[in-house]
Amino acid sequence: MISATETVGRILKKGDYVVYESTVYPGCTEEDCLPILETLSGLHLGADFKIGYSPERINPGDKEHTIEKILKVVSGNDAEALEQIALVYGAIIEAGIFKASSIKVAEAAKVIENTQRDLNISFMNELAMIFDRMDIDTQEVLEAAATKWNFLRFTPGLVGGHCIGVDPYYLLHKSMKLGYNPQVILSGRRINDGMPAFIAKRLVQMLIQRGKNPSQTKVLVMGITFKENVADIRNSKVADLVRELMDYSIHVHVTDPYASPNELAHEYKLMLVDNISDDYDAVIVAVAHDAYTKLTIPYFKNIMTKNPILVDLKAIYPKPNDNGLLYWRL
Picture 1 (cartoon, one colour):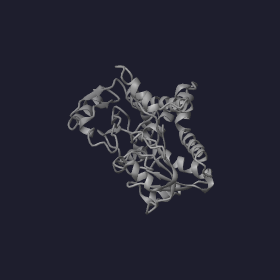
Picture 2: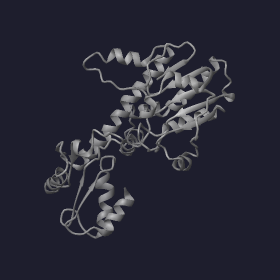
Picture 3: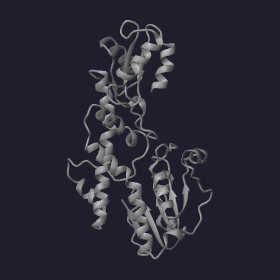
Picture 4: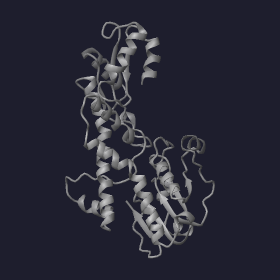
């Protein structure tokens, strides 16, 4: 944000509008970015230029909720800025424009959108860990609970990417600077960040249960991007899961139809396998890519050894009636 602001500040001229879209903590636009714009340009807010904030709400890989179909929140440093910014976005946004009362309100609205999802998923993840100890299928519990009209249906899983896995820390940072140590947000972050370790430990337990020495096993991890049908590997919690498995001396193969081998090697020092073999002790389906949703239980059994284990982190497949296959999901 600072680097981008410095670039804009050097070319800013009278009559310009500067609108930020990146997720930030409340106050970032006016307290951190504005002084840079004024210093580098020699101009003054209000008299020479105006600023605004309009959070982006794009969902990567979503072909339905495209930019023109998502209601746009806009804000400006004064009434005139608000109206002009609303007019610009309104030229393409079909879903409508929401005019926030201030820039800080718009900033806060965006950061809590992502923080709320993080907390809801962390609750599901905590439930998954509790119910696993009780030998209760979490997905079946959620299916039953969702029959109530006001139950909010979320599912457990790995929380990666930038929006949900990182943005809550912006709010944490600002809150701590103001002297308040958030409890709920921190707790949710701890739970979600701890899921790769929980899953790895659980798989090791299942390997031992099936008479396999973890250090002599081979596991296939299917999918390493942060979500389905995208190539983005930023903050991939699947990568953390792979490292956790490697810490148990498990030989891990990784495959993904979307991830770039070069980016994966550069970012995580991990390699994608060119060909899937047929001697895996366990398979972890970590991302719900379309190509994976079409796979069948016989396919997985064909690429695994005796006493196979299928870990379905996204609950893609129906629970199989196959005693020879150990099936586990969050």
